[in-house]
Amino acid sequence: MKIIFCSPCLSHFPGAYRGPTALKARSMAEVGLDVTVMGFPLDFDPIKTQERLRYISVQSGLSARCRELIAFCSRRLGRSWLFVVEVGWTQWAALRYARRHGADVLYISDIEPWLFLPVMWLNRFWRRGPRVVGFYAQPFDCISTTSSLLQMPWYTCLRTRLNYWAALRLPKIIDVVSDCKYTVTPYTKVSPDRVHAIMEGYERPHLNGFEKCRARRELSLPSDKKILLRFGLGSPGKGTDFLLAALKGIPTAFELYVVGQMGIICPDEDLASLVPGAWREHVHFVSRYVSEKERIAYFSACDGIVLPYRFGFSGASGNFRDAISFGKAVLASDQFLMGEMVRKYDLGLLFKPEDVEDLRRALVEFTQKTDDWFQGIAERSKAIVEEFAWDKIGMQYRELFERLVADGKR
Image (tube, rainbow, N blue to C red):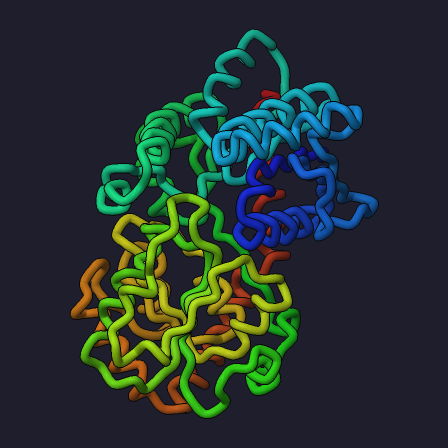
């Protein structure tokens, strides 16, 4: 079965899209699917050409002059190019490529609904084509994230609302898959037969590399203190401001590392000014993109991952999955899938979303936990990784694609 795997956001945030794209594409190829990954960048190093796996760029075949013009426009237009032109172009090009090469399924990872819906309306003029499956990484529900929207620029708010409007209409035309029942719930009422839930995969621990002491030496982190990590792209929805506010009045019994690039989705926040005076020497900002090796080192070095997300985050974030893969304690806002899994598998501590006092209570409790508590979480995490390993997720996708293609031929 021939699959075109469109990843329209490869240029956006390397940590958020490159790794998951490579892992998911490889998992599909390893279960016998023929997978062509298509994105905008000219190269995608995580994908090495194999018998059933390869990468092609939207820019393949363009002249050097055209590529220079693209680079110029990208610099001039900035975010507008990144979030609109590049994503829209990649999604349209992938559909065109899939039709021309007789693909069975076009799978669009991290689909941008408002840009793809018009393409599918036009596509109705052609009778035959691939079965299209779009991955919804979020519910696109702008109502449940109002507090986040209030902190975003007008153009980000507009994009969010357009996506919410289009996401409710796409399931009438294409199949939609997401990582949990909570994310797909708003769309099951639209077209229940076209909405599917498949968990995202977890990396097996032996792939992760570093041991804690070595990782701390590599990063020059203290060896004798608990370390809490807030990792990933900075945005209002991540709730870092709540986390910093919750530090006020509690003992400086751990080191907090806030690691990840800021200012892409929204202008930079002056987070350093929010750090309470007593914590100035214990909160460390690494406001840049970190390499894959550094990411592995930070997750290996820490004792726990804190996820103070605002209300409305329905699925399992990449940081949540990484915390489990590395066997780390999770401190998460108690909502939807993350709250359910932390409670079910006893993975850490929960607190009410957007509640500074309850987050402060969880932070204090974290400092009081013993080594046996952390070791117990590491052991339980291994079972989750095996249950949702990428090879098993790849098989679920194969079964879904085979069923959809068979239904289309009836």
